[in-house]
Image (cartoon, rainbow, N blue to C red):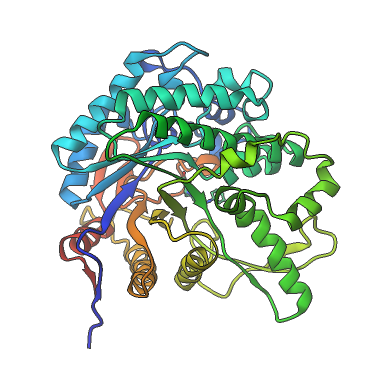
Length: 449
Ligand SMILES: OC[C@@H]1[C@@H](O)[C@H](O)[C@@H](O)c2nc(CNc3ccccc3)cn21
């Protein structure tokens, strides 16, 4: 007996991308460098020195890509806006940069695809970084609000869903603490300062958004959330989970939804960074201004054991499940656990899975197709977890596959393919993978078998 899993008729089926990963045209129509242009051109920072100079050439091929979305039948398209196109220099608005996004939105609306805009997906203008380190400078809040306000003015009447930030954990911890992403700093105090200013910029932008009273538009934030599980039933491993969870999840969920940073992590971090003198009176009230929805990016879980020598008292251990090309364990059941926890402990607001997807070794076979059955299996299992949560009353409104296209996978360059559409970077030819045809069927029927 085939089990049919049904989704609500108004479920928002989408695909997601980001500006630096697909657009290319890095010097076109007034755009100036971002920190990722600089970082990717720095020796040793990306796989084989790959950059986003051309990427998927989406800046020129956007009409073809929107047509592909139409063929797949997506209801919504989550993309990000490149800040360096809009404000190539501090205080200098660039209408030509904005015009690209107006053209893109026009194409989407012509095909009745809902535009979902991420305001910041990591491509900080280089000019901002050069003013005392970008997000390390509290003035970044002002620069960001000026940028976001211009977007609301110019596109607020045609874009109904706005995401202030994609994954503050990545744009702060991974970028200023671990150093794997631009600007590549390795300083924990800097990482927490950046996180604070990014969260503050989120709250200030939400306030401006509310003041503009944009009819029918909603605003939220997207967090990458990684549920942590203990390697054993030992009490020390459960303590490791507490800190791993605080590091990955609660440091961002708590200020946004509870108006405070988690005490246990403040205590742990204070031993490393000293005073939290960058937090000012009123900041947490701003960060926790009410939002309309939460975006959740989910890829995998973590399993941790206690390690006295680790700053977080935790170290990751490999999970038993199948691994992806990124080395991430496939764990759809952990997505269910995560959603239940968010519903129980944080919010009853609408949630969207704003990213879920997988990298496998894709190849074009002799029949000219890409038979990515593992990706179909991954998406199917995660959709089942979502359907179970919805069935139990969970307020989950939509799902965006990461990604529409194979694209620039940050430090991994073009070596990792996440797309449901294959990109031949030599020719820029797009090939719908089997997963794209499968996703088309799911969207049409609203069920998975
Ligand atoms: O890695 C796949 C995608 C990436 O292409 C997106 O731009 C980004 O939003 C994204 N976030 C995650 C999950 N978080 C993460 C964890 C460790 C390193 C990098 C990202 C995966 N992805």
